[in-house]
Image 1 (cartoon, rainbow, N blue to C red):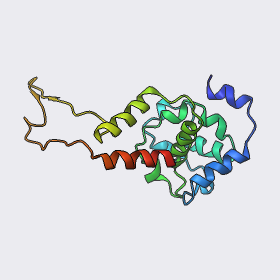
Image 2: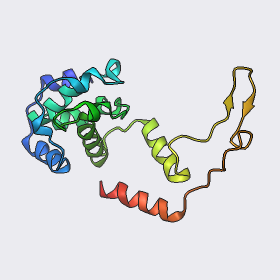
Image 3: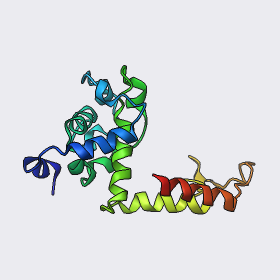
Image 4: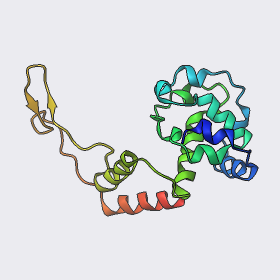
Length: 169
């Protein structure tokens, strides 16, 4: 079901709005005056059903539940351009991350790729696995061949801290 379908039946939920605003303390969500600078620099704009400034507006109006249950919040590539461009510090990035956290809390459908990335971080401390590179001459190199230091696995303390932070959110 698309967000448009959800929105046609929706009514604002001010309790959910307040829950998000509490998580965004210090982030000036309500200062957004819809200048669209965040949207003009968005890397994932073509993938989004809603533009970044529209997401901020919908949250400020109280349509949190619909956004938290939609796929839109998972298409943001977290490039942070919106954070850099926003003159009022009302960046959609923080709103989208808060909505993702809310979706996970509610055990909403989380994309498999996102879960794989979290699992990879827990296991290796890296968001991506170490890969070999291929040159234009079709030569393959690994880290050792490029004389790069070995990547060591994170200590158990990292994994424990990471899991603790994930639970707090």
